[in-house]
Amino acid sequence: MAGVLVVATATVGTLVYLEEHGPRLRGERELVGMSAAEVAEEAEEEGEAEGKARPNGITKQVWAAGMRVGDVTTAAAPGWTGQQLFDPTADDWEPAVAFDPAGTYGYILTTRYGAPKACGNCPAHQIWLKRTVDNGATWSAATYLCPCSGTKAQNDPLIEVANDGSVYAAWMNDYAPGVVFARSTDHGLTWTAPKAVKSKAMHFTDKPIMAISPTGRDVYLAFNSSDSYVAASHDFGATWGAPVKTNSDGRYYFAGGGAVLPNGTVVFTSSSFTQTSTGDVFVHVMRSTNGGASWTQTQVATTPEQPTCVALDCPVDYYGTIPALAADAGGKLVLTYTGPTVAKGPQRVYAIRSADGGLTWSAPQDLGGPSGANANFSAITGRGTGDFRMYFMDSRNGPDAWNTWYRASTDGGVTWSAEVRISDATAGPAYVTTGGFFEPYGDYGEIATTSTGKTVAVWGEGPDYRGPGGVWINRGL
Image (tube, rainbow, N blue to C red; front, top):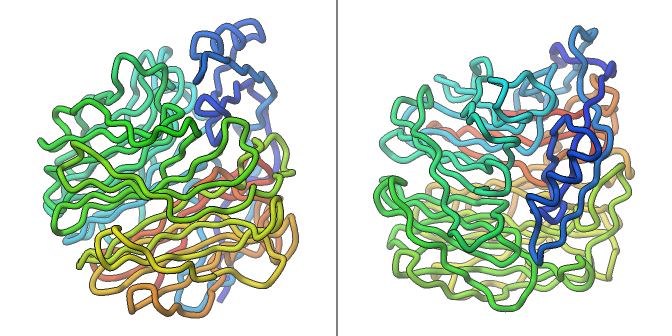
């Protein structure tokens, strides 16, 4: 049965933004509203690994104030409520989602472009929060997660919930200090002051991934400063130890997923690229059995170079895999990643499994769709005994007709259900058609389960890398 939602149409305004990449141009877009000279100066100040600044002042499209509105039509997938926009008039991307494991609260964070600042000296683009008190049936209006006066831009939000309902968030405040952490004990209404986790020697930090113990006492943040690092807290995020470097190969890392297992073992996954984003892409597992004091790193997969992204303004490694990782309640792990069979060819999506806390892994299992489709941007969640749920995107309907596909496993990832297309909107913004959406918007999204076992998936869609686009939500019945 079709549903109708209000959404912005294609009337747009413009702002200037600076595009960088960690600062190596991947998934971060610095909206600064500066002159060309100021953009160049800002890029020089921010710098990047090896000290090479890459300013790229261009025009950014954003939804204009006072725009017309139209309709989004959905044809809800079997077992799903149908797609909805996180906010029908906002330019949102790269969302995170989490639910209270024992209650009815849930949370979505997103990076928002073009919205009014919280104050004159507050970020030009910000992390926004929505809350639900009924396991995702309805959502509150969006609010700033942190006004963060003195910060120019925020990116890359993450959110987790401990067993007692405490909420944990991490994101980037600029590239320096970069990754910051905050905690809420009143269901996201108020938050502690953001605490940076970088060391003084680091020029920047980027792309965090967070994992917490069930009690929330132990918090781990994996991130990059070109190299791979993990920082740990054992007092609910009040204080942090020095970040520990996990690699020595000189490659450029992007963390992708993490989990704290019942026995306290911590496992993260990441991908790594050459500094020019050419050549083979590696998938790694980082593992600690001593509370993050030291880490062992294992390369668990190698794929040929990612296909070239042809969408407007996307960076060269945009289609390169960022792996995802989840654990069930017993500590079984499933890791998903994408890669081509030949350099720059269409990618497949794969899953590997571990039953020993990430020490050893199964052979890869191909979960992709039809041959020739370009797959990417997987997300996964785990719960119960062997209960894993994942999605990935692919372009089987054409290069401008991407879709999000859902699969589930009840046996720890050994077998998987048939694909369900959960990007089930058929009309709305100009980038949505009956065949799919033009381009994934941002290089990650997330999937989560509620305390009652419902699935909630969030991801970004847009016309291209530049936008404007939006964050979309779909919920299992």
